[in-house]
Picture 1: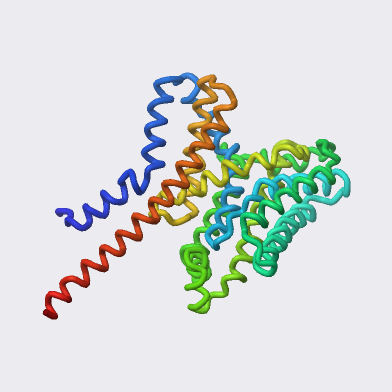
Picture 2: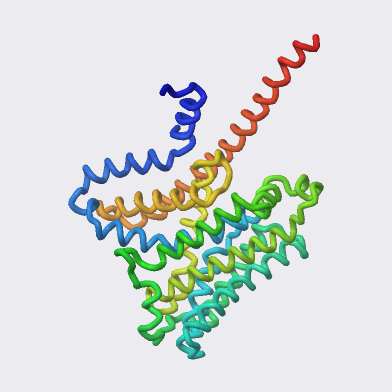
Length: 342
């Protein structure tokens, strides 16, 4: 059975570098590192640790992705993860709460932070970048106050089980990331709420005229993003078995880089869940390969910084190219009608 030209064209478009550049970059990196450092790179332990280590970054990226789809760039995502990690440790070590109470309470705190941020944006009319930047500073101060700028220890061994439990050799945070990713994908891509969020983020005025409650969607997107970031913070405390006030902010750059690079994957310049997850792991593999090759640690920041600039530039180019393509398609449809009318 022969393949139709349209099907062949769709397949080539789906596999093109423009649509799945991260996959092609991943294959190139796999070949380079496999030839460069095969004894260190091609180890099953390296890949298992990579899956586990980046699961929390993936949650932080989803926490940033959902508000961004609704039109709010969240620069407080690192502070939210860090503050949730400190609160998680404080509730266990100082307040003595059981895990069954502590974990939902931490997620609730994260949701409340998102709610406050959303109200500042929608009710006080503060730009999202300024509002989230200010919230980030407040959360950093809160982390220092709660922890007294020191690690919170004496959490106990039971909480560490949450991050170290394995199923088929894969730790629990990886499965949590997959579940959260699937739920986020379903809501964003398969429900009216998701379509309204994309509309609100793409053109808030047009969405508002169409009856979409843009401000309410913005607030709820920040609430959900805050809850996901808090979950990442709680798992971070479980992983290191302590509340460390210095580690949370480091999630900001990898999370935003994954979100913007992910927008160039699969959806042609549109922010999406699976593009974010794939981009996040592709970036992590690049960093891991450089680390195993013995390059200095400052290369990590350089890599993520360059990747973020490139990702933002590519996402803007994708949106412009798609808009031009849509306009050209409409013009091509109109021309035959004009000829027929004449």
